[in-house]
Image (cartoon, rainbow over all chains, first blue to last red; front, side, top):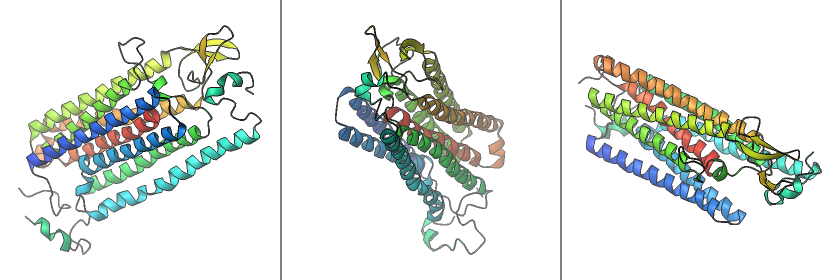
Length: 138
Length: 246
């Protein structure tokens, strides 16, 4: 059948059965990653661990989420099947997020440090020392 | 039909063909989604900034531990896992609807679109329950030496550090107020995307049933609606990450 859309010169629709297999595989991957993330989240809740280890586990969860995003965009949204130039016009602007995240989280933590240093009530409501903090809230 | 091997040698930019090999509407949907990614990104990053600026932040495992009809059972993250799973499944049914559209299979498109819409409505229903539970669920909080019962709203946060009152009761201090505002603001903005996605999908379903796409000879509209729907799922990955997991 002659296609009525002239913008598309080449079609790259995958074969029916292989495509469904690919979708099932991706679904399984997404579900398994989600279950691992939940397991790690509950592990942080159930087991008392040091803050470095907690930070490490949180980093692992972030990386797993990025993997999920990669599968959703690449397979479900078919971005992986598009022409490289098209992919680049979408992905390159998103690089702005690297600066965006780093700068603003840095800003937030600097704000906390400044407040803790100059506000007169250093870490007044730090989690374990909560009992002490009750009276001195300004 | 042109072969895929010719792909590399094609002069895409010498005129006569679309250099990106997609139709206009789909390309513009991609650029819209990119800009929407920045909107959500800005919200989530501002949440991150405020969170990093606080000495204390509530533990999501404590806040989100309820499940409908489970009473006061402590089930951290169980309900939100269900919501995540519902959204993943509805994303999969959408992929299958788009795939059925590629082979001009009207029956398949209608079937999978109905499942996708059901998934979207189920997700919204879950979110409505979760919001209601957070807003209406009162907790004992020590405010100026008095124990008060407050729920989670944009102006109140009962999830502060644990302490005990003068009479030895286990209560919380008020937590950072920004918690509720960011939670309801961002999950609400995402929920609004889900809602508009459901509306778009219903329109697509009606058009498919009426044979609009059959007459056009292609189901590319389903593909664009599909891109939007997958994006909603994609955003949920990060909302789930930022509010529930870390």
